[in-house]
Image (cartoon, rainbow, N blue to C red; front, side):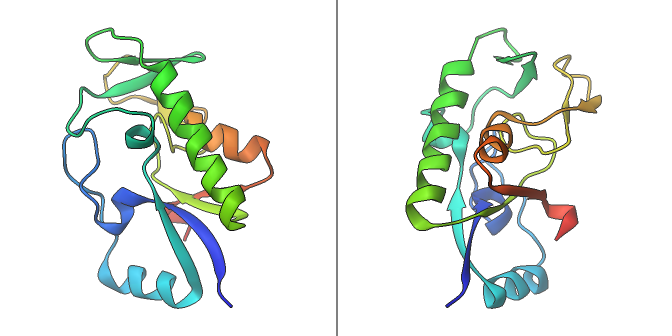
Length: 142
């Protein structure tokens, strides 16, 4: 039986990014992952009730704000809780998440200025998964 792994849906080609596009991994990498793991796609931002496409958002401290200044922290927290619930329900103890994302980024995220500047930190979902003992890696660490 394959190990179950949570993976950002955009990395699998689901067009759920803020701009309605995906971050699909190369076919060879997807084949390699699917041979080794049972992949469980998640999009915490969609799970939290945000639309696709949507205004981009970035973390500012413990809050998440859209580029227009709307506080979307509640939606990001709801999506993170849903991803954690799914991971626990299905027995996944690892996650492969989209780097730099305000939801999924692990180790670095955008700094909240919408200038493309990265800063140390975790996205809301990555932070919650880690706090609950789920290992999180970004797509470049596969």
